[in-house]
Image (cartoon, rainbow, N blue to C red; front, side, top):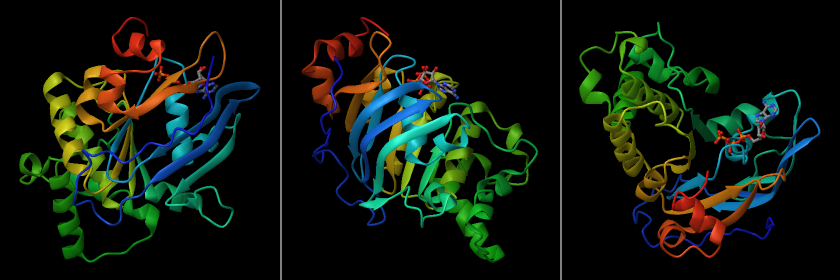
Length: 279
Ligand SMILES: Nc1ncnc2c1ncn2[C@@H]1O[C@H](COP(=O)(O)OP(=O)(O)OP(=O)(O)O)[C@@H](O)[C@H]1O
């Protein structure tokens, strides 16, 4: 019952007009994934357009997080994990043998479900923590500017500018998640992956993160996994619905502009899912 056609997503008319030229388009081509002998994704193809938010939706266990981890080469950290297919960032193979894994992760950043700042490290140092990955050395003034810029983009600057030396662990959950977003932005990724970034947060913090996503998409392409259909409808331009039916590996049933996916889904399974009839 699964499909494996190319889920090329046409550019959304609602995409921001003045998008940064550094934005990346991510293209997954015929991605299959395994944990040991267990195949969990089957030939998933999806284009995640520059300057848009793409939401990955679907019931638990259908492979959304696995797909996300493949997009920045985190899947291969799991000893039993393997994959087939290609991931292209603006046409360049993210898995090319000449490309360093750290380079792939620098270009495609990740924010996780549970906020994970370094709790004892200051807010200032947390924001810059990813820079060590890149080996970039910067002057104090440059670092100060970068901290302010990234905390501002993550919607946290006004709340923390007077206590940058306080530990990251002293912030609320929602503030910690925005700090993690700031940390991701500091290494200037072209794509930001977010794996259920609000599932551990209260409604107010969730709203703040959603506002942040709406502002960030002019600067970084965003791919978000969410179980919250209202959130998918609010934040995304495009949606892809994943399903693993009857023990089969996960695959995309349907994708397209978010409004169409919610208002006029082509597949009855999509309709049932987005209207909360299963999953
Ligand atoms: N580290 C792992 N080792 C073995 N199997 C795994 C591992 N991680 C995920 N799986 C399996 O891969 C399949 C897909 O899991 P994945 O977490 O990608 O789904 P998901 O759609 O993101 O689920 P959820 O919405 O619950 O987070 C599941 O069958 C899961 O049990």
